[in-house]
Every structure is written in C-alpha cells, then in structure tokens.
Image (cartoon, rainbow, N blue to C red):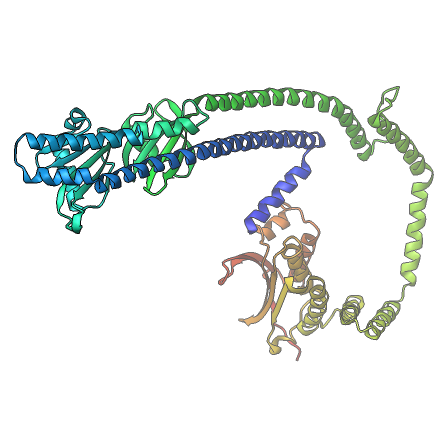
Length: 595
C-alpha cells in the first residue's frame, strides 16, 4: 500500500510538472483512447447480443425438434407394446416353438411377417428401418437383407441384451453411427401369465430420419445439422464433420452454446437434451460468414481508429504548437522580467484580439506600472518600513508578550479549551527561555523543559502521528549544556520525519554517561541522513536548507565551547523491531554537573 501511495505521488508530481501543452495532449489522447475502448466494448457487446439471440432462436427450434424425436421414440414404444399384446403373434410364435420343420412353420412365419408389416405401415413412422423377431435360428424380418447386414456378433449381442433384461424394453444406441439405433425386447407368453420366452423383438431405427425430419420441420436455418450423443458416445452425426471432430466438438463445448472451430470451419453450437431418454444433442449452424463479417468489421474499426488517431494527433500537435509558440514567448518575457531586466522585451506592434494577445497587453502594462512604482515609491517605502520596525522592536517589552499569553490562557480556561491553554502555557515557557538573557549555568533539566514545552505544542498539532519518548536519568539532569542544543535537533527530526510523510513518526531522546562523557541520542523514524552528512555540510558539498544551518551551528557551538573532540554526530541505524532505517543525531560533550 505504501509503495502504491509513493508511486501515485511520483506520477502526480510528474504530471503536475509537465508543460501545459503536454498536459493538453495527454488529455486529448486519453479521451481518444477511452473512445477507442468504448468502441471495442460496443463491438463486443453487439457480438455477444447477436450470439445470445442466435442461441435463443436455435434453442427454441431444437426444443420442438427434441420433443418430436422423443414423441417418435414413444410411438415406437407403443408399437412394441402392441406387438407384445398381439394375439396372432403370440399364438404363432407359440406354435412355431413346438414345430421343428415343415410347411406349417412357414405359414406361422408368414402370419407373423404380415402382422409386423401391418404395424410398420399403420404407424407411418419413417424412422423405423425394419422390425425383426428371432426365435432360436428362425428370423422373421420386414427387411431380412438389411437385418443380415448387421454382423452376426452384433446380432447375438442384441439378443443377449434383450434376454438379460427379462422382458424389459432396452434401447441400444451404441452402434447408431453405423447400423442405427436398436430397440430390443424379449417377447414372452402373456396367456395365463406364464411369461414363457417366445422370441426376441429387434426394431432398427434410422437416426438420420429420426432427427432430420424433426429438425427440418422446426428450423429456420437451411444449414442446421444435428449430432446425437449418449454420454460421450456418438449416436448420430448429421453434419459434415468427421466422427472424431464431432466427439471433439462435444468435449470442447463447455456451456449451453459457444463458437467452436472444427477444421477450417467455424460453427455456432447449441447443446440440449432429448426428453425422457437422457440423450444429448448438439445443433450446429455455420458461423463462418458471421465470423468473417465480425472480423472484417473489427479490422475496419481498428484501421479507422488508427487513421483517425493519426489525423487527430497531427492536427492537435499543429494547433497546440501554434498556440504555445506565443505562450512560450510570453513566458520568456516573464522570466526576463523576473531576473531583473525591467526593460520590456520587444512585443508585437499590434496585439491580437484573442486571449493570448490580451495577456501580452496586460503584461506589458503591468511591467510599465511596476517600473514606475519601483522608481518612485518602492525604495523609499522600504526604508520607511524598516525604520518603523526598528523603532517598534526597540520599544517592545517582553513582559507584554507574557501578559498577552496569560490573557489567552485565562480565556481558554474560561471556555474550557484545554488544548489552547496547553499551547499558550508551553509557548510562554519557551519565550521565557528564549528571551532570557542568562545562558550561563544552563542545565540538562532546563533544556528538557524546553523540549517538553515544544513537544506539547507539536503533539497538539500532529496528534497521534507523533510518538515521543525521553529516557533521561535523574542524576544527569544537573549536567551543564549549552542553551537550545536539543530543541533544534528535535525540530529537525519533526520537519523531515513527520511533515514530509503521512506515517506515524517515532522520536526518542536517550541520555547516558559513558566514561565521563554525556551522550544524548535523538532518534527518529521517517527520514535518514546522507552518508558523511556532517563532513559534506562543513565542506559545502551539501547546501543547507533551512534546518541544515541550525545543525551546523550546533556542531560549531559545541566545538567552540568544549573543543574539537566534542560536537555532533549524524548517522543512521536500523530499527530492531521494524527493520526501518532511522536517523540519529548524537551529542557528545563532557559530563560536568552542578556541585
């Protein structure tokens, strides 16, 4: 979070320091970029809306188609129930089972064939390829040649499945892509509920007829195709895709709809379920033309935006440079005036009637007036003011300041404002120390009183952002120390550790006696000293800024008072708990106490 704040401040400073013309260019290009992103978002939204409407249209069509497929399968179930209940089929199958060979067996066969053919024509279900009944080695089929095209092992497997279900109807879609969908059922004797096996009924369904009729009757799209799946197994492939591509399409389609690539073709695919049978269907429509249109529109949009950006950039730069050329000349005039050249630079003879011309005119008028003021009044007025100030300073009585502060303190207590009372009390104490003429025999105890008064004022100002602690043993309070030695260092710590940071600043003062020396360490977080800071200040390599002069004066004053081995050290340490770099100002003077 701190890094983000720092980076944000750096970016704000960089932007604020930019020339006005660059700021205007940034605003123009930012607006154009936002417009560009809005255009892309609009295109994406339009494409998504089209896809959603396409999905709703196809899904509505396929819902009706799926219901038709389910109805056709239910009609086949009705045929199976009718065949099971057909007395002619029951009787002839029973008679055939008792005969081994002979013409009579052929008669029974013909009767059963006629009944099956009657069902085939009566129900008028185009999806039924043929119906067959197998009893031992006898096959009765409405299309024996089609049935015999089914491999022997597959026929045996169908018969075994029907027998294992003990009279239940079984749908076998496993071979739909090659031989069709099979519905098998073991026919049993229903007379007297003996349930004696009489044979196996096998109905072959043409998945193409089952799906295409339903799809074409409800679809508004000429190129719509349908895929049927039982789980991951492909039942029927009514598209131009290979079976492998169809299976991959089913795996890639994760939601209800999507745009999928199949080879070189782009398809819009919609997934759904066949009611009652738990089959999945995927309906596909060619999306290539739409995809090409969307891609072409996107490229055309990008081309237009790039061309527009180039034109806008050229015009914006030309116009801004033309405008700011006159601004730059005016800035040069102002800079020249600020450096003390009071002669007005040669300006256009005729001012233009726009805002910049008005600025030129007013600036020239202002310079002329200032020159008159300086020549006639400014110097005399300054001398007069300085004389008045010196007269007032010589007449100022310090007791007037004390009485004024006491009045403010009394009024603050009357209105119960503790903070104002504390500030005035602390400020009054500071003034007594600063205006007092007696600087000899000044002790660490008195210096810490100055520090405490100063901290009282600063804590009211910074509240919780300032955390101050002092560790001064009582036996060191009588040590002599030059007046106002610690307070300027404390003020320096607050200046660089608190005012330039939004974090809490921890400041500590620790006093110790070591081998006859008084060592005072002022430590603060939030800032650090440069390496060899004191040496650089003394050599002039670092120019003091405000508080730097105070630090150098303290060091020189201590050395003048106690000698060159003593003075002020500036260095940095790492906090043992937070690992944060802290600035340390260390005072080293002889430890001389009051007797």
